[in-house]
Image 1 (tube, rainbow, N blue to C red):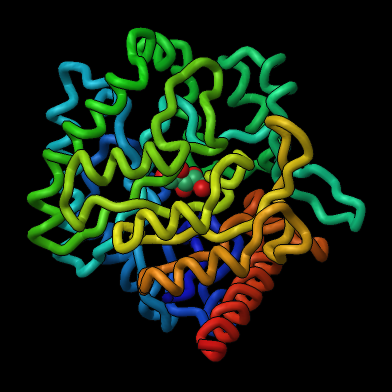
Image 2 (image 1 turned 45 degrees about the vertical axis):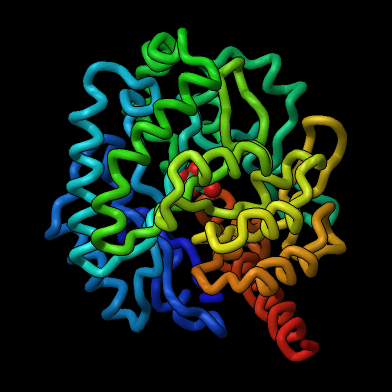
Length: 354
Ligand code: DNO
């Protein structure tokens, strides 16, 4: 497994590459062209520039998170082919630049959703949290303001202000889209991009829905083992794989994550590993990575990844905000570095006890 950290790029991320470089066991970063909008074709010069910046800091780009998908592709409207062409062109340029992992999601309108970005815990740390009872009181068109008002001025991944300004139109686009239509649009997209992925060996890694249930009545199709197996079997190409995100899948206590890992096997191309603490139905917060701090068994998760031969990039996912750090919510350096060392320790122990 290759230990990585997410890095949002110059001008966006207050955590510098020099600091990431000092995390013990770090292999590389997961990054993106953060200023790009879903649907844009990425310029070769921009990709080569960020690659050089990362390599000059002594790291490598281990994957892209995310090349976001335009809503026309998700809704399958008449302009989707144009946006799929742009996506294919971006994949080709990434492939030519030697980048072979792309994370993406297929969530309608909203990406990951939280009700609080700084819930205070007993020890003074703050964490991202979600409570369905609070969501039920929010009008979807106000959701961006709720999230944005808590974002400390940072642009949050997946919550691009330009796209969110059109949230009513977005809801309108999805009016007739149910789970089956969304699934067939995903299948259409995957079939169209597989040739370029196969040519350059690019592993596509769909990110689960977060939280792992429908929000605001919008369909969500990447919530559980059955959904994930359906996706990889629908387009049975080794390049069509999954981001195993323990926090997203783990938001639903019904999801047995080690079991999911064992059934997806070599179709896991990327892992996001973090813990969550279930507080009640539809109510959870992001704890420290340590098993004892949350509801997930991190040892069993790492063991299942090891047993299935997972060799791809893994990143400690969101961390708590601790020690007075200011950062993008969930993406401070300190707690993610603690998480990375803890996960590396679990892995070392698993390997040595074989
Ligand atoms: C949030 C992230 C998501 C994720 C996308 C993948 O912190 O986990 O924004 O990157 O859903 O496309």
